Length: 53
Image 1 (cartoon, helix red, strand yellow):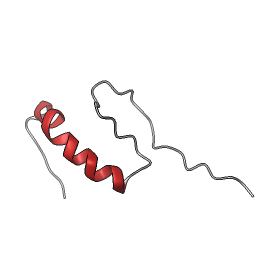
Image 2 (tube, one colour; image 1 turned 180 degrees about the vertical axis):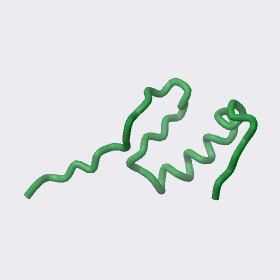
Image 3 (cartoon, helix red, strand yellow; image 1 turned 90 degrees about the vertical axis):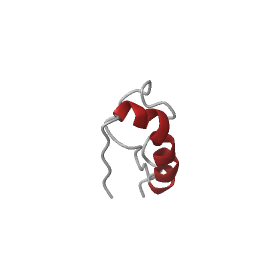
């Protein structure tokens, strides 16, 4: 599903919390900051470091 908005500032205030709570479970390796406006930018998701055998 794709959603669009003309009120991006309003989305960050009202809609982001619902999206964050839903997607945190589906994409746990991705950062989901509570306040994305002040969070540092990232290039990628958390690494899947596995011990080598």
